[in-house]
Length: 258
Image 1 (cartoon, rainbow, N blue to C red):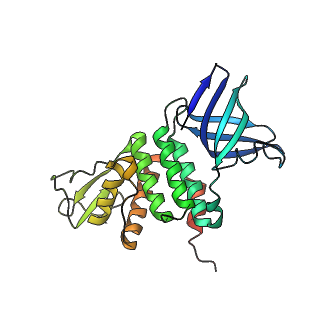
Image 2: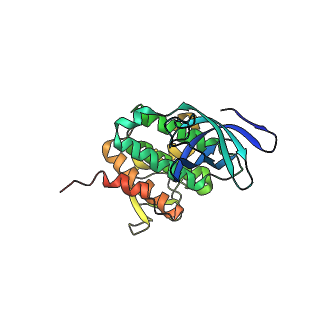
Image 3: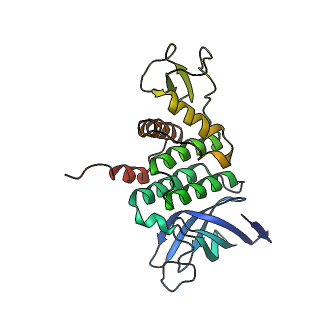
């Protein structure tokens, strides 16, 4: 990822469009996650027009090379040359909707005018795996929820039972509020503590403690994947305090039609 700055008025950088908003008949207001500058919000004039050179590069989930110009009140997009638009997502509504939600989630934590390289790489790699169908949507969703929150300063403490120091047990209870766990002898299920298997605990440890290049290198049984999905989502929602419409839509896809 190459990021450079030219003077005070122009920024040249790569970035991923994590949010778009239509403005009038032909313009877009986009939110771009960049490695060096965090989140940049900019107007893309005429970008909705089919003849506009920035049409593809400013669409949601486009990874592009941008030139931003700082106007009086906001940034404007001078150019947006797409590098990757993840066409594979368009063939699977679950994967596409998962990518929309994850972009929404990561945008909640990405700072403005500060380094966001780790978050950007996490989101790009995860969306790529979804687009190529190399990992399942629930797997990627849970991984990004836990890893993104860890990067943002909400890393769970999963080294040992928070009360007795036991490293592992057949069943433990993960507390979504404190981000700690208790062994079966010290904990009990309630609204904050979720019972999880040792397989799920091991996966969570891998996600938050592993080197970034290795975080995807593990497998889960279907039952453990469902368990991880439940606890990771609960943890993410607890600490964002947000209601995500993109998550509502994603979950609606699994509701049988009547």
